[in-house]
Structure formats: structure tokens, C-alpha cells
Image (cartoon, rainbow, N blue to C red; front, side, top):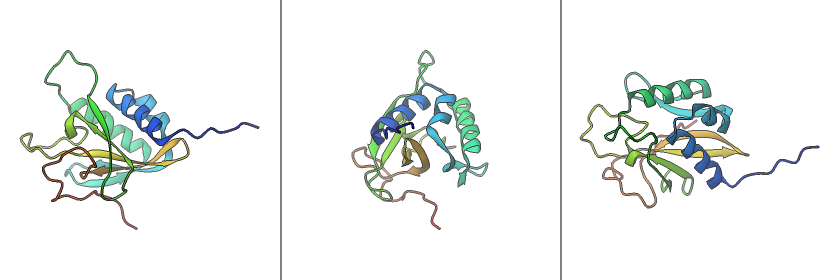
Length: 151
């Protein structure tokens, strides 16, 4: 009988952040639950929920669209904060000061978006876009709310 050791959520969040930051889509896939629900942007830039496969395709497409200011850099910069609105205390991954993976058509906008994580055991079961963080300032944090699927 195999004993399952449950990892700390911060460790899982850090593993996922490292995988996304280094464009390691296989590692990202390993950390996501098969039947989870993951936020993406559709072609109209509206938030929709997707399955794991569609989320990974969207993330790869976001990697391809994102351009670095410093082309010699091969990894995204990230911070791990906490949600302070929709799922208070849950880890939020903020890449490139909130500019990735949501890529705005208006690059002068200073709004920041993060990926808020929910867990089931050692896997990430849900990812939602989050705009209200515990310690990271966001110029629009009073105008936006976490976008979360409500059933």
C-alpha cells in the first residue's frame, strides 16, 4: 500500500510558478488535475473556463504571444502573493508584474492579473484570474474583482 504524502500548497504553487516561468508545459500538465476548471481568455478576450487540455493550449499560445523586453532572458519573472478577495489566502501567481498570461491589447494599461490557485491533494484543481492581492499593489484593484465561476 502506497502512502500519499500531501505537499504544502505553497510548495505546489512554487513548483507551478517555476514550470510556467520556464515554459515547461509538461511540468505544468503534471501539476494540474485532469478534471479541473481553468480560466482562459477566448478570442474576444472574455474570461471562460476550460478543461486541462484547452488551458494548456491557451498557455502555450500565451507563451508564443508574449515578448520580452530583454530577449536574452529565457524565464518569466514571478511573485507569489495571496488572494485578498474571492478566495482569501489562496496563492496567486503573478508573472511579469501581472502582464502574463493575460495579454492586453492596450499595453499601456497598468492593471495586473494573477493566477489564483485552488488545490485537491497534490494537484492544482482550479485556476482563476485574480486582480486583488494581499501585498502586491494593483492600480485597478478597487475596480475589478476576481473573476470566478459561480454555480
